[in-house]
Length: 247
Image 1: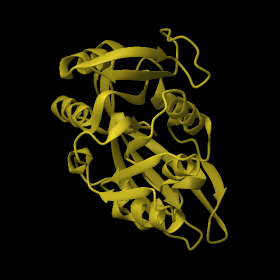
Image 2 (image 1 turned 180 degrees about the vertical axis):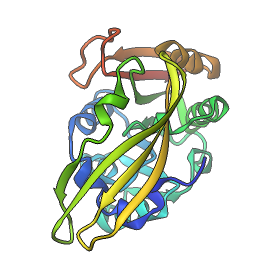
Image 3 (image 1 turned 90 degrees about the vertical axis):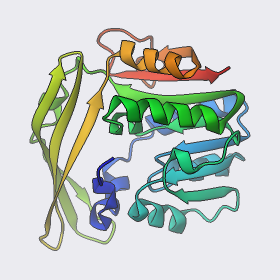
Image 4 (image 1 turned 90 degrees about the horizontal axis):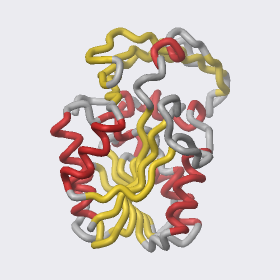
Protein backbone atom coordinates (compact mmCIF):
# COMPACT_ATOMS: atom_id res chain seq x y z
CA UNK A 1 0.00 0.00 0.00
CA UNK A 2 1.07 3.62 -0.51
CA UNK A 3 2.35 5.64 2.45
CA UNK A 4 -0.54 6.73 4.64
CA UNK A 5 -1.22 9.91 6.59
CA UNK A 6 -0.58 7.86 9.73
CA UNK A 7 3.15 8.10 8.94
CA UNK A 8 3.03 11.86 9.63
CA UNK A 9 3.81 12.54 13.32
CA UNK A 10 1.77 15.76 13.46
CA UNK A 11 -1.34 13.90 12.26
CA UNK A 12 -0.72 10.82 14.40
CA UNK A 13 -0.53 13.12 17.44
CA UNK A 14 -4.13 14.32 16.98
CA UNK A 15 -5.67 11.02 15.87
CA UNK A 16 -7.09 10.06 19.28
CA UNK A 17 -8.73 13.46 19.67
CA UNK A 18 -10.48 13.25 16.30
CA UNK A 19 -11.50 9.60 16.82
CA UNK A 20 -12.59 9.66 20.44
CA UNK A 21 -15.76 7.57 20.07
CA UNK A 22 -16.06 4.29 21.98
CA UNK A 23 -18.78 2.38 20.10
CA UNK A 24 -16.41 0.20 18.07
CA UNK A 25 -13.98 -0.35 20.96
CA UNK A 26 -16.71 -1.49 23.31
CA UNK A 27 -18.26 -3.73 20.64
CA UNK A 28 -15.01 -5.61 20.02
CA UNK A 29 -14.11 -5.78 23.71
CA UNK A 30 -17.46 -7.47 24.36
CA UNK A 31 -16.86 -9.82 21.45
CA UNK A 32 -13.40 -10.81 22.72
CA UNK A 33 -14.89 -11.60 26.13
CA UNK A 34 -17.88 -13.46 24.69
CA UNK A 35 -15.75 -15.87 22.65
CA UNK A 36 -13.21 -16.31 25.43
CA UNK A 37 -10.29 -15.03 23.38
CA UNK A 38 -7.11 -15.53 25.35
CA UNK A 39 -5.02 -13.88 22.66
CA UNK A 40 -5.97 -11.15 20.19
CA UNK A 41 -4.13 -9.72 17.19
CA UNK A 42 -5.07 -6.10 16.44
CA UNK A 43 -4.25 -5.50 12.76
CA UNK A 44 -3.81 -1.77 12.19
CA UNK A 45 -3.56 -1.09 15.91
CA UNK A 46 -2.78 2.60 15.47
CA UNK A 47 -2.06 4.42 18.73
CA UNK A 48 -2.83 1.37 20.84
CA UNK A 49 -5.98 2.45 22.68
CA UNK A 50 -7.85 -0.76 21.87
CA UNK A 51 -4.81 -2.97 22.53
CA UNK A 52 -4.42 -1.36 25.94
CA UNK A 53 -8.08 -1.90 26.74
CA UNK A 54 -7.73 -5.57 25.82
CA UNK A 55 -4.66 -5.98 28.02
CA UNK A 56 -6.45 -4.27 30.93
CA UNK A 57 -9.08 -7.01 30.67
CA UNK A 58 -6.58 -9.87 30.75
CA UNK A 59 -6.14 -10.65 27.05
CA UNK A 60 -2.72 -11.22 25.52
CA UNK A 61 -2.33 -8.85 22.58
CA UNK A 62 -0.22 -8.40 19.47
CA UNK A 63 -0.62 -4.94 17.96
CA UNK A 64 0.66 -4.59 14.40
CA UNK A 65 0.77 -1.42 12.33
CA UNK A 66 2.83 -0.18 9.37
CA UNK A 67 3.04 3.38 10.73
CA UNK A 68 5.98 4.02 13.06
CA UNK A 69 4.49 7.35 14.17
CA UNK A 70 1.36 5.62 15.46
CA UNK A 71 3.30 2.82 17.16
CA UNK A 72 5.53 5.34 18.93
CA UNK A 73 2.40 6.71 20.63
CA UNK A 74 1.15 3.18 21.37
CA UNK A 75 4.40 2.20 23.08
CA UNK A 76 4.41 5.33 25.23
CA UNK A 77 0.77 4.77 26.20
CA UNK A 78 0.87 1.07 27.09
CA UNK A 79 3.39 -0.44 29.45
CA UNK A 80 1.69 -3.86 29.62
CA UNK A 81 4.05 -6.82 29.35
CA UNK A 82 1.18 -8.78 27.76
CA UNK A 83 1.30 -6.61 24.60
CA UNK A 84 3.72 -7.22 21.74
CA UNK A 85 4.10 -4.41 19.21
CA UNK A 86 5.06 -5.20 15.61
CA UNK A 87 6.01 -2.49 13.13
CA UNK A 88 4.76 -4.10 9.94
CA UNK A 89 1.81 -5.96 8.48
CA UNK A 90 -0.30 -9.03 9.19
CA UNK A 91 2.26 -11.11 7.24
CA UNK A 92 4.81 -10.31 9.99
CA UNK A 93 2.75 -12.03 12.72
CA UNK A 94 3.50 -15.67 13.56
CA UNK A 95 1.10 -18.43 12.54
CA UNK A 96 -1.53 -19.89 14.84
CA UNK A 97 -1.07 -17.44 17.71
CA UNK A 98 -4.53 -15.87 18.06
CA UNK A 99 -8.06 -16.73 19.09
CA UNK A 100 -9.29 -13.47 17.56
CA UNK A 101 -8.02 -11.14 14.85
CA UNK A 102 -9.60 -7.68 14.79
CA UNK A 103 -9.39 -4.99 12.11
CA UNK A 104 -11.15 -1.99 13.61
CA UNK A 105 -11.23 1.68 12.69
CA UNK A 106 -12.31 0.69 9.15
CA UNK A 107 -8.86 -0.76 8.53
CA UNK A 108 -10.46 -3.11 5.98
CA UNK A 109 -11.09 -0.14 3.70
CA UNK A 110 -7.40 0.67 3.37
CA UNK A 111 -6.85 -2.44 1.24
CA UNK A 112 -7.73 -0.86 -2.09
CA UNK A 113 -6.59 -3.61 -4.44
CA UNK A 114 -8.77 -6.73 -4.36
CA UNK A 115 -5.72 -9.01 -4.24
CA UNK A 116 -4.32 -7.07 -1.27
CA UNK A 117 -7.68 -7.50 0.46
CA UNK A 118 -7.70 -11.26 -0.17
CA UNK A 119 -4.13 -11.43 1.08
CA UNK A 120 -4.87 -9.78 4.43
CA UNK A 121 -7.78 -12.20 4.83
CA UNK A 122 -5.44 -15.12 4.09
CA UNK A 123 -2.89 -13.79 6.57
CA UNK A 124 -5.59 -13.35 9.21
CA UNK A 125 -6.66 -16.96 8.73
CA UNK A 126 -3.03 -18.09 9.05
CA UNK A 127 -2.60 -16.11 12.29
CA UNK A 128 -5.67 -17.73 13.86
CA UNK A 129 -5.77 -21.04 15.66
CA UNK A 130 -8.32 -23.53 14.29
CA UNK A 131 -11.76 -22.26 15.27
CA UNK A 132 -10.48 -18.72 15.83
CA UNK A 133 -12.45 -15.68 14.74
CA UNK A 134 -11.88 -12.66 12.53
CA UNK A 135 -13.92 -9.49 13.15
CA UNK A 136 -13.94 -6.20 11.26
CA UNK A 137 -16.20 -3.51 9.84
CA UNK A 138 -16.56 -1.61 6.58
CA UNK A 139 -18.87 1.26 5.64
CA UNK A 140 -21.97 0.76 3.52
CA UNK A 141 -21.07 2.09 0.05
CA UNK A 142 -24.65 3.08 -0.83
CA UNK A 143 -24.61 5.87 1.77
CA UNK A 144 -23.42 9.21 0.39
CA UNK A 145 -20.24 9.46 2.43
CA UNK A 146 -18.80 12.09 0.10
CA UNK A 147 -21.66 14.43 0.89
CA UNK A 148 -21.44 13.69 4.63
CA UNK A 149 -17.72 14.33 4.83
CA UNK A 150 -16.93 17.08 2.34
CA UNK A 151 -15.89 20.46 3.78
CA UNK A 152 -17.25 19.73 7.25
CA UNK A 153 -14.85 21.62 9.50
CA UNK A 154 -14.41 20.60 13.10
CA UNK A 155 -12.26 22.18 15.78
CA UNK A 156 -10.73 20.23 18.67
CA UNK A 157 -8.38 20.87 21.61
CA UNK A 158 -4.81 19.95 20.68
CA UNK A 159 -3.07 17.52 23.10
CA UNK A 160 -0.18 19.98 23.45
CA UNK A 161 -2.37 23.05 23.93
CA UNK A 162 -4.40 25.33 21.73
CA UNK A 163 -6.82 24.11 19.08
CA UNK A 164 -6.63 22.50 15.67
CA UNK A 165 -9.17 22.40 12.86
CA UNK A 166 -9.59 19.59 10.34
CA UNK A 167 -11.69 18.96 7.25
CA UNK A 168 -11.65 16.85 4.10
CA UNK A 169 -12.36 17.38 0.41
CA UNK A 170 -13.39 14.41 -1.72
CA UNK A 171 -11.38 14.50 -4.94
CA UNK A 172 -12.45 11.37 -6.84
CA UNK A 173 -14.77 8.38 -6.78
CA UNK A 174 -13.98 5.47 -9.10
CA UNK A 175 -16.37 2.54 -9.55
CA UNK A 176 -20.10 1.99 -9.25
CA UNK A 177 -22.56 3.22 -6.60
CA UNK A 178 -22.36 -0.22 -4.95
CA UNK A 179 -18.56 -0.68 -5.08
CA UNK A 180 -15.96 2.06 -5.45
CA UNK A 181 -12.72 3.67 -4.29
CA UNK A 182 -12.97 7.20 -2.93
CA UNK A 183 -10.00 9.52 -2.60
CA UNK A 184 -10.05 12.57 -0.39
CA UNK A 185 -7.64 15.26 0.69
CA UNK A 186 -7.39 15.73 4.44
CA UNK A 187 -6.56 19.17 5.85
CA UNK A 188 -5.37 19.91 9.38
CA UNK A 189 -4.69 23.45 10.61
CA UNK A 190 -2.44 23.19 13.67
CA UNK A 191 -2.10 25.67 16.57
CA UNK A 192 1.31 26.84 15.30
CA UNK A 193 -0.24 27.83 11.96
CA UNK A 194 0.95 24.85 9.94
CA UNK A 195 -1.53 23.55 7.36
CA UNK A 196 -0.84 19.83 6.95
CA UNK A 197 -2.45 17.97 4.06
CA UNK A 198 -2.58 14.26 3.28
CA UNK A 199 -4.30 12.22 0.60
CA UNK A 200 -6.17 9.04 1.48
CA UNK A 201 -8.04 6.47 -0.61
CA UNK A 202 -10.61 4.13 0.91
CA UNK A 203 -12.29 1.12 -0.70
CA UNK A 204 -16.04 0.75 -0.29
CA UNK A 205 -16.94 -2.86 -1.12
CA UNK A 206 -20.46 -4.20 -1.39
CA UNK A 207 -21.59 -6.69 1.26
CA UNK A 208 -21.59 -9.38 -1.43
CA UNK A 209 -17.95 -8.69 -2.29
CA UNK A 210 -16.91 -8.72 1.37
CA UNK A 211 -18.65 -12.02 2.12
CA UNK A 212 -17.41 -13.65 -1.08
CA UNK A 213 -13.84 -12.72 -0.19
CA UNK A 214 -14.17 -14.39 3.20
CA UNK A 215 -15.58 -17.52 1.65
CA UNK A 216 -12.80 -17.55 -0.94
CA UNK A 217 -10.05 -17.82 1.69
CA UNK A 218 -11.85 -20.33 3.92
CA UNK A 219 -13.79 -18.34 6.51
CA UNK A 220 -17.31 -19.18 7.64
CA UNK A 221 -19.36 -16.07 8.39
CA UNK A 222 -21.04 -16.53 11.77
CA UNK A 223 -22.75 -13.16 12.18
CA UNK A 224 -23.21 -9.77 10.55
CA UNK A 225 -24.55 -6.53 12.00
CA UNK A 226 -25.48 -3.15 10.57
CA UNK A 227 -24.33 -0.92 13.45
CA UNK A 228 -22.59 -0.95 16.81
CA UNK A 229 -25.86 -1.54 18.66
CA UNK A 230 -25.91 -5.01 17.03
CA UNK A 231 -28.89 -4.11 14.89
CA UNK A 232 -29.56 -6.29 11.86
CA UNK A 233 -27.83 -5.52 8.58
CA UNK A 234 -30.18 -3.73 6.16
CA UNK A 235 -29.65 -1.86 2.86
CA UNK A 236 -29.56 1.43 4.82
CA UNK A 237 -27.26 0.31 7.65
CA UNK A 238 -24.19 2.52 8.00
CA UNK A 239 -21.84 -0.42 8.63
CA UNK A 240 -21.23 -4.01 7.68
CA UNK A 241 -19.75 -5.58 10.82
CA UNK A 242 -18.57 -9.16 10.37
CA UNK A 243 -17.68 -12.05 12.66
CA UNK A 244 -16.17 -15.00 10.76
CA UNK A 245 -14.73 -18.31 11.93
CA UNK A 246 -11.68 -20.16 10.71
CA UNK A 247 -12.58 -23.79 10.03
